[in-house]
Image (cartoon, rainbow, N blue to C red):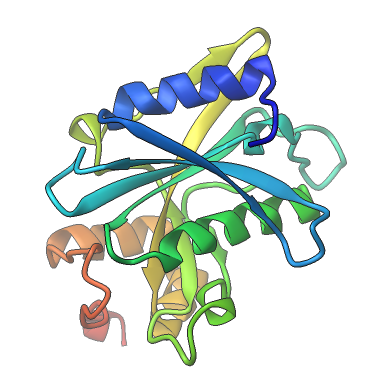
Length: 200
């Protein structure tokens, strides 16, 4: 594993306190081996058979707004997934690589397109939707303050193309409301798409 900075160690400790469980940390590299990110994984901390995944080190990268100034907060990513779904680690790492390469700020309600297409043949849900973490700690994933930095976590959820189009048109808050109202199980990789009929 890559030697971690003090910031990375603080982020890992913070995430582990939220996730619970015993951790495994593994380094992931992009295809060119030029970008890497560590992933923290804990097993059975949410439920038996469900793992928690979090990036370590994405918050070392400052994210920029349109005028070139640094965004007010840095980010790490997290996800909950069934233990046997080994593609989720790669997907979260790829989303982190995308953010590192572009260095453009991301927020709840953003979509990173076609992440799963790199690992699956014609995935039903190819995109990652970023939202406020809701699976852990009674839906409260506290901000980490480290020296002068603020670090917040964004949860990754897989989404259908029609959901991506909906989010682009109506925004993340409307999509979050539908997920909640329809009690969508985002851990189910075979779930049906959100019912968007009332917006048709």
